[in-house]
Amino acid sequence: MTSEDAGSTGERSLVERIPLRRLGGLAVGVGLVTILVVVADPGAVARELATTQIRWYLLGGACFLGGYLPATLRWNHLQRTAGYPSDNMVAFEVLAVSYALNQLLPVNAGDVTRTALVDRYYEVRSHSELAGLVVVERAVDLCVVLGLLGAGSIAVASELVPVKTFATGAVLIGGLAVALAGLRWRAGTGPDFAGWLESVEWVPSAVAGPVDEFTAAVGRPPVRMLGVVSILGVVRWLFVVVGFLLLGRAVGTSVGPALAGALVGGMSLTSVLPLTPGGVGPGETIGVSVLVVGGVDEPAAVVLVFLQRSFGLLWMAPLGVLVYLVRAVSGHPDRR
Image 1 (cartoon, rainbow, N blue to C red):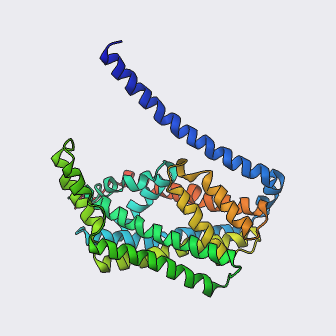
Image 2: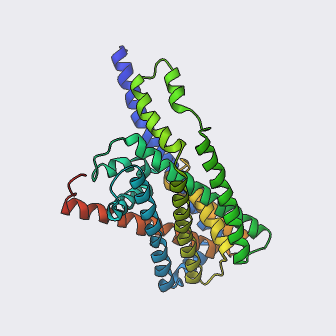
């Protein structure tokens, strides 16, 4: 076998392995979901689903999509901080398509391609800088989600479910995480990726510039920007929690804010892990486990988690596709 043959064989095997790995992850996820349904009794799950009140489900979905408002204001603020024109409609269109890609493709592909989406509207000066702003946004989201999961889990485990207890815990844990991250960023004590790359001989020197711009955006965000992004991030996730509370009404199950916060936090964390596409399988497993520990019957827990998942697949994804198609038909405005 010649070196060319070996090289082509290596390329083919790599190309073949990538889809096989994704299909394998999807198969694992579907298998976990199937096990959940079987364990909870398929007949009971079907009966629970059939008695779901559509009115409350639609209200929950509307509240879930209401989270686009603070998310849009947040991304517009980040864009404006980077020197781009303030335009909430552009920010909404970028986020709608980005969130849809997150739902339809593995490993949060929408976040990875967001700079390319922005490039359709503006003359992007630095894709690295925009990528850094996406990381800042996601880091704040992670802190809020961890706050929901931590405070909710503690409240459920201690049977302390009053709204005041849950809200206080969420604010303390989430606020502490954001404050520590903010202090570290402001102090510039984060990893010096640019310096590390420059010290590696085989890395092209051309990489240093973009990496510098990326780490500058992530490393030292202005205090005001971090504060606005954090507040809007909390508001965005509160919309998601309230949407799940309305799902509880749809299924006829009492779900308190602590339990809703723990479930939203747990499922959201699994969705960002590259275990299965979109976290399918692990997300449902954690969601059902949290609800059962909180006292919800298994069939109702499975239905609640499926309905929560449907907000992403049946609401967010179609909205993003619709926004993309409408913009494709009407044409993008002149780039600014």
